[in-house]
Image 1 (cartoon, rainbow, N blue to C red):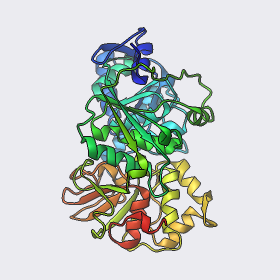
Image 2 (image 1 turned 180 degrees about the vertical axis):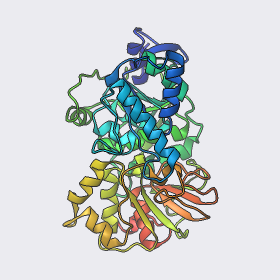
Image 3 (image 1 turned 30 degrees about the horizontal axis):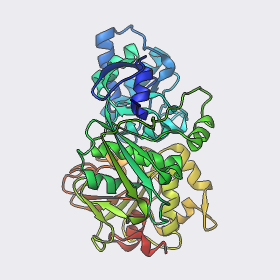
Image 4 (image 1 turned 45 degrees about the vertical axis):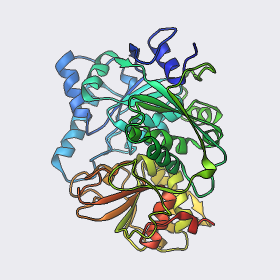
Length: 433
């Protein structure tokens, strides 16, 4: 019997020839990531269980990326970063991206990729549910809790249950008015926020094959919003080019066997899809942008690990160029590299930063998670009342961007930008004809 891509990675990391869904196996971990929210708890577990003088399992396999609550006056947030800094110094960790120095990178899930920590065939674990973003590189990547992370920190191993795999075959050329976000909102709308609970969501098809790595990252990022254990896309030349430009570490590519067994298979013709939104207060509350067009908004937000990559801002600029926004429009680059690129990347003869400035968007925020997770009261873009917001972020549960009374609509950068121009939810096809 053949193995799926996820099963193959599990088998190799468990030193087995075969695994099956439901098997509990010890796997060797290639990369462990934690950040300022969960890092102190992870370190606490590690020091309690292994001792304050214990050494981590492998210094070059630990990545510490403060990114959630760093541009704030909140003293407790600063304390969390201080704990990471002290631990990195004690353990002599080479990959601590300190927000107080030029080593700072930005949002962990995008920074991991940009800094060469995402490689095909590996197992990457992180103390953040959107760690599944890295599955775009043909690796098993998932979020874990502080207790598990503390154990990995000391041993380099974790006991994991092999997930059953669901295959999503996205066929056809992506229409010019759609983005990866639209595809995932449609899938989550179809199967629900629990439709892939503890399953691997494997994405393939001609549409996926034609995507850039950044769009593939968006696809895998939101697997968790369907309950998925991980999202994953087999490595190909596009993956290889991206990875080898950022790291010289060797890796092993895996592919699903032709005879692999899947829990289910879903074939989608992307040409039949429309620009999408997720209505408050759940990622599976699907609607077409056309169906809810005219819904008044109070602000627009472009950023996060899902919607703050360079390609997301390029898409927004296509609509914002030569136009003006009618509501406060917040722009949060995911990483320093993205922010720097906005000043040099051009559309219609102008740098993206100039386009956004002329459109009346708020000045660029420092790269971070910012309002995606809510955060302290001085967090950039945080909602405080009953505002209606359209956002490129990945969750719209009550309180997700700050206020439990706010209504958050999730959408692609195209739809968010078009809605900012109109001051109401807008089908971006009105501007992309």
